[in-house]
Image (cartoon, rainbow, N blue to C red; front, top):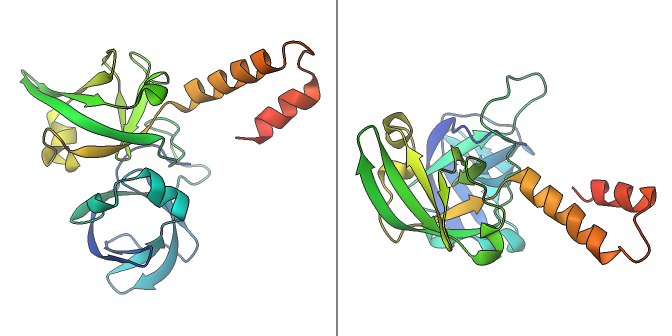
Length: 207
């Protein structure tokens, strides 16, 4: 589990054969989970100046691999007993979004991001969303997009300073919205026979 608070900007040294090699100050251990641009990945090798993570086929099928270059966000998995900030982030990318408008404001910048319809259902006004691993608050939800207002501090310390109209980003929608929708869908599916405790336990175990 992650919080969506970026701990470091790492640099991609190489991406080949499903393995991403990063240059970073952070020193993980083999087997640790690290979110890279919001994607939960496992550390498979260590180097004097960084580490390797491996991307599964399912992950590669969802994300835009062309963005695995230059600088990337990294966040180590949250440890028991740490202060909880941001929001609950699993590191499971739901879909790719595309930045369709960037509008400067008095004390921040508006970013409008278009995402597929099936993911937009889980985007809630004033709710949480993760964009390339950054925990953010949704200001407005449209018919095919949503709007964020990013403060200068966040822009200066994340990849948002590099984003342009047309940039594709990893999107993880709100965990609780997906959880509730799944329960309601299962309830509707089984409404003829009703849900028993065994069904509820099975749904809980699926998360």
